[in-house]
Image 1 (cartoon, one colour):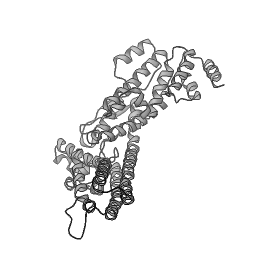
Image 2 (cartoon, helix red, strand yellow):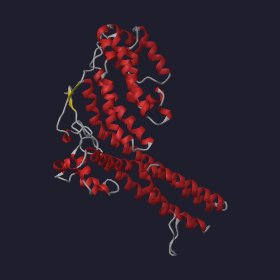
Image 3 (cartoon, one colour):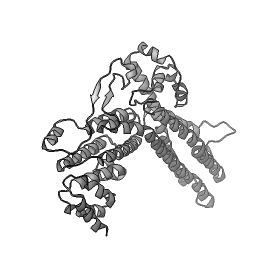
Image 4 (cartoon, helix red, strand yellow):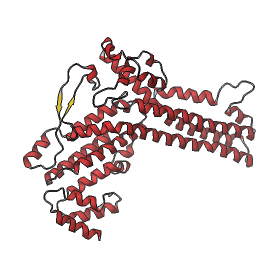
Length: 416
């Protein structure tokens, strides 16, 4: 585990195995007495403290961490760069010593003189302090997973104590059931961790949609400012303009050749996603980093599908779409830690919007309408098809070389 989980380890160690004063007994000392009633009572206290008190505290800290990481308003850069919360935290000397996000959240709106004092520190010092804030906020999410893991180990150790030191009998089985209550605690922390990541993804999705819109050329994404410090124009006196090419798959031979020679919109989009996710990926546990990326990919894929439905496709444009979808999937696999997510099949099962995007690419790349029914039939047998017939009709109608009436007739026959 990372450096931010070490304090939690000591918390667990001293909480469950403190040097017991005469009037008190730790859980381990209760086990050592050999008295099942005493051990059962101690086990119930452990389950209650972990599953109720500690869970509530850590879940609240993760919720505050998600708020502090809101792009553009917190410690992550938004469309206009870093928010005032990030700049205030980076400048605040009091922020160097806090544990958790409560103090940072309280100080986030303070520091009215921050913007006027930014030049007092070097850019590297500002970057470092902001990175520390991101790391501390990320540690609040990690703590939920760490507690789940240590609680699981604790349950196993207590069960071994029972097998080694208690005779078989009704009282021992009752004690065993008390210890197995820790299994529910593990599940509670795991569920809380999943909800925390979902909440973080929700706070980041508005920025993700902006990134996709800028890449495909929607909603005023023709120009974006560039700056020197983590994308923040506040810290840079000069800006530059980067042209954004609109998503277009209505390609003739010349346009297709030019598309192959230049960096497409997907490449620029993935670079912007890297800038958004990388500060968190460096501090998250691998499981949480993967979950965050999968959630972000879902938002990206949903937005791309909406943009694709507004485009027309030539056969060459469909090939270009296939290349773009493969680029996006390779981008994800290169950054996912779990070996189970390294294949296209498992990645699509983990991220259904990305799976739909892949199915759209397959559908639009059929050489002939007669191949559509075979593609859908084979994919359904493999469990790899989620598109409805109405979706298929709409998408196939985007191919400029397919007649709409023939598309409707073909899929109407299959529907019947």
